[in-house]
Length: 71
Image (cartoon, rainbow, N blue to C red; front, side):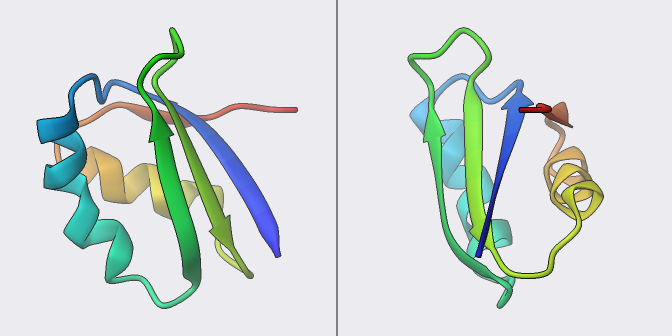
């Protein structure tokens, strides 16, 4: 199980609700959450065998910036 961490432009709970159906529809994602208190509006994704670019593309399709954070 991998944990991928992204900085995003998602700033409000309403925006999380916009992204929710897109993330929950991906079978390879076992869990995800946003930390909107963090200055980078962090998205954490628990998955097995999924590309960070795929997550970035999902959020970009919804109109949000998303970039993997290296750790």
